[in-house]
Amino acid sequence: MPSVPTMLGSTTITRRLVLAGPLSSLPITAPNRFSTLSRGFSLAPRLSQKPYSTASADAASNPSQTPPPRSRFRRFAGFTTIAVFAFTAGLVYQTSKTVSRMMTVNLTTDEETLSAFVPHDAFSKEVDEYIRTHPLAVSLRENPAFTESRPHMKIPEHLRARTLTGGTLSGPDKIVAPPLVFCEDGGKSLVSLFYLGPSLCGHPGIVHGGLLATLLDEAMGRCCFPALPNKVGVTANLSLDYRKPAMAGNYAVLRAETVKVEGRKAWVEGRIETLPEEGREPMVLVEAKALFIEPKQAAAMSTLYNITN
Image (cartoon, rainbow, N blue to C red; front, side, top):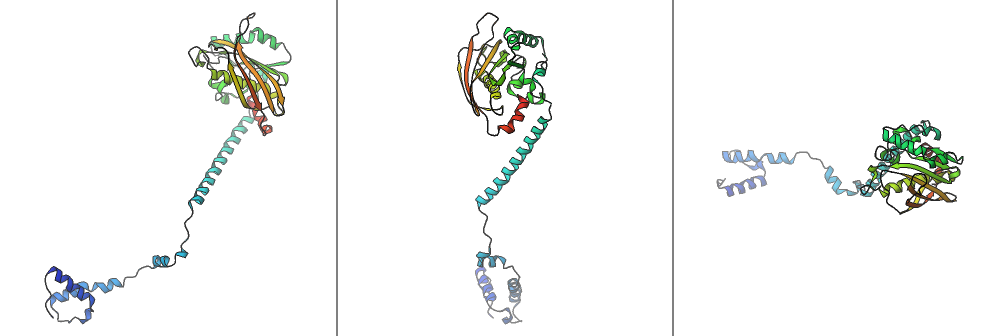
């Protein structure tokens, strides 16, 4: 057998030739370098006999057996359904828990609210005394058609702190004492007396117009609710006309009157004016008109409303 070239390129060609032919055809007496070369490449048949899996090949040859991927829309719809269900379940549970806790509270009567407020300092005591003994309050108290109360004091204490006018806006330099309210029977009219402190301003020294709107909205609703079938409603429309700046650090009186009722709808007019000394004319600060509508599910809301009204 001719000698094998020792150059790198030639050696490569020789190895390829050896692999192409059967190793058994090589003579046993071949030179050592051929024997070494044969032993080095005798692993090729063994590697070709290594077992392997045909799963991927079968899947590729039979694409119809591969399950189709789930669409993004179906996955999105599934996740959304689960999220909505979890949110609804949590909301219903928390609401029922809150309502059941509120239902266990003993409701305060109108008469009991009059003694529920305890002044926390000398000034709040002075304000409370001035409101209760004002000639307007005295005359309304003597009128049997009106019922006197402090509605904010009906709200349980742990809930009152979370209300706007009964909690957040109430206290020193704000609404110093809970408004003293006189309601006429049948939801005909309402009169409320209160003091507005210097911490309720928009412009310096002038009470914020949004606060006046809030007081009117709340009082006008309380005025007309007894005239509605289930004694509860929500604000559908509220319009205001500001006449004069409401100066902070002064007493004021709010007057509301139910002017029309049709089924579940009630129209109310109201105003806030100064509370002057006896013999002086009040000055109108803001006037308002509002429409209140009783919700269709008012029968279920009326029990809850009684707790906060």
